Length: 143
Picture 1 (tube, rainbow, N blue to C red):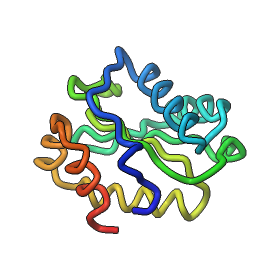
Picture 2: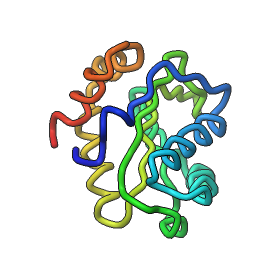
Picture 3: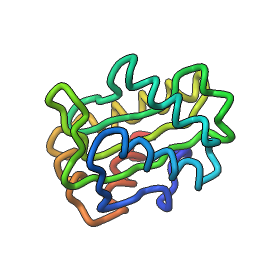
Picture 4: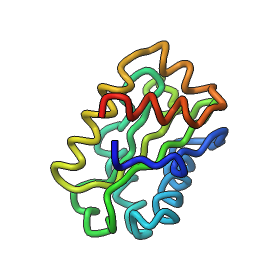
């Protein structure tokens, strides 16, 4: 997956709630030059429309189509939350794969993540690993 760099994987993070995790993820996207600050509002609106929680402890936060004007460059950051973050509906997210992408790139990235992270045991391992390479290889292996 050419939209993920090892330097965009952040281990051992903590957030008291979903919106704090979203804010942290958006700040990482901003620091990486992928988005502008207004993207955070798009991410929050997207969560209000429907949860970005996939399965197996994975959430894929991203903005609504109206927030695409806040995207500078397509890409993603991965944040590991070993204690998990309450994502609502009895779901706990241990890995956040925050996306900044337009149109077809967005769908391609979502598809690749869904394919890469479809193994429950693998996702459990990634939630607690201390190895950036393990997360990187697991997410990029099908790309």
